[in-house]
Length: 103
Length: 211
Image (tube, rainbow over all chains, first blue to last red; front, side, top):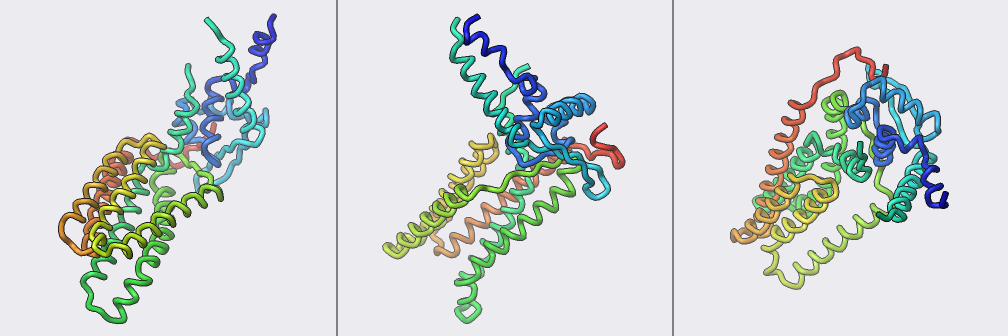
């Protein structure tokens, strides 16, 4: 296997999953966003979004805070430094992969 | 499934403008500035007039921006966040603030130099203002993908140049420009807000955001 091909297998699978990539892309543009906004933008069900958020939190890519806004419970998410670094690395990886690809 | 990372980021930034509240607040500020110019043009010369022409504009701009920011935030807390979610944007960094300040300072210095060098050019102040503000609308529209800002830019340019060509004094022309531009912003913002409220539903009370 060529080194180029071997590198294709080294993709960050946490961030490579489209729903999680969407979440990370949204959070990379803001300081924080709540569950309602993320659900509206990603179009995921509550359960599905919750599972993806838990996975990202487990990987250390996002921080989740639960609080109350008035009397309404609110779950707020923000990207960590590791998450921001992972998104940058993923974009660079994709760029390299596309550039090395010839038909 | 394709993920357009830059498109998602742009849409997230655009969310700030989705409810039209910031346009309404800016429009009200423009109307206040227009009212100030009109008062300056109409009031007889005296101590009150001196206060208006020296401290009036900075007071309205600084106070209006401060009040407007708080009013928009309060309205968003009540109308937008309970419907479509809460987003907190990063504060502009020092480099961006410095750049904005430098550009604003350069434009103001150029305008003052121009007015001193050619007093007859005073009547063109509304036209220059209209074009500069139109350029800023175009920048925002392009950066966040907001089509309605192109219409606002065209209106600002036409209103500014029109106010200059109407044969009014500098103060009357500026008052006319800010009144027109402010009305356009408030009307555009109100239409956007109405559409937003129709399209988005309030979350029922007691619903937990996360399962």
